[in-house]
Image 1: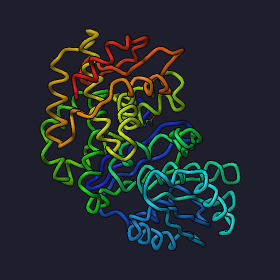
Image 2 (image 1 turned 180 degrees about the vertical axis):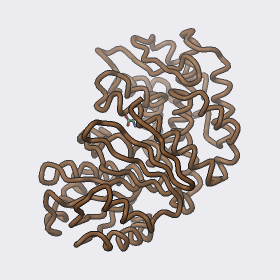
Image 3 (image 1 turned 120 degrees about the horizontal axis):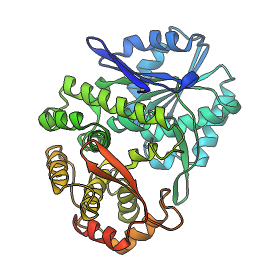
Image 4 (image 1 turned 135 degrees about the vertical axis):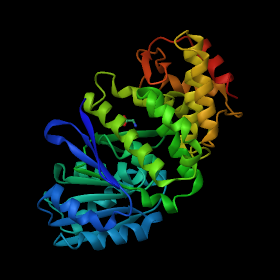
Length: 371
Ligand code: GLY
C-alpha cells in the first residue's frame, strides 16, 4: 500500500504517497540528459533553481546545472565541503545568506546534489528560507539513494548532538541516477549496501533472498542488479514513510533496525572511524543476537544475515567495542522511553517489531557476541 513501482526499460518510478505532498523517486541510468525535462514536468513553473552540491561531485553538479538552464530562467550553484562538519549552523547560515544574495524567493527551488550530508543540509535550508521553498534531491551516494534522500528528514548537528535541529520537509522529486556510482569510492559504496540489506530484513523476505542470490553482482555494481536493489529499497522506504511520515505511530522507527547499536558504536569509536553503513552492519548483527536471546527469532536469521553481510564485504564484528561506554550512549538514543532501552528486533526475515524495556544485561551479551 501507499507506494508503487512503475518500471520502464531502463528507468522506473517509485511514488511516495503522502497525499498532496506525494512525490516521485525516479531511478534511471545515464539520465542527466532527461533531468531538465523531468524537473519541468514535476515542478511546472521553474524560474529560479539553486543547486547546492558536495565538492566531491563538482562535475556531476555542473552537468546538471547546465541541463537545468534549459528550463529555468536563472540557475545559481554553490559547492559545500564534503563531510559531516558541513552540517553546522555556520554552514546553514551561510547558505541562507547566499540564497538571499541570489535573489531567491518563494518560487525558487533548492536542488541538493550529493550524499546524506548535503541532502540533510540543503533540505533544511529549503525548509527554512522564506518559511519553506521547493526542494529536489539528487543523491550521489548509495546510502543517500536508498535512505536519506527519501522521506523528508532534514537537519543539521549541534556540537555533540547529531541531527538535533531540523524539519520534516519532503522533496518534490528524488532523482536517482545509478551512473553516479561509477565514481563512488569502494568503501562508501559497500557501506551503502548495509542499508539495502536492512530493507530485506525489516520488510521484504523475497528481496532478501534476491540479494542472497546476487551478492557478488551487487558488490561488482552490476547495473541491473544495482538498479533493482535501489528500486526495492526505495519501495520499502516509500511504503514505511507513507504509513508514518513523522515517526509518530512507531512504524517509521523500523527503519532504525541496527541503528541504536550503530549510533553507540559510531559515538564511542569516534565519528569517522567507521562509515555509517559499516556501523549499521555491525549493529544489525548485535540486534539479531539480542532478538535470539529474547526468543524472538531463530538463530538461522543471524546466520543468513551474517553470510549476506560478509558476501557484501561489510564488517560483522567490532573488536574495539567498549560495552560500558556504549550503554550510556544507547540510553540517550531517541528511542529510549522513560529510561528504558527499546530496540527494533527481527522476528523473521522480512519482519521486525519494537521491543521495550530490554534488560541491559542482554544488551551487553549481544554486543559481546560481535567483538
Ligand atoms: N533513516 C531513517 C528514516 O528516514 O526515518
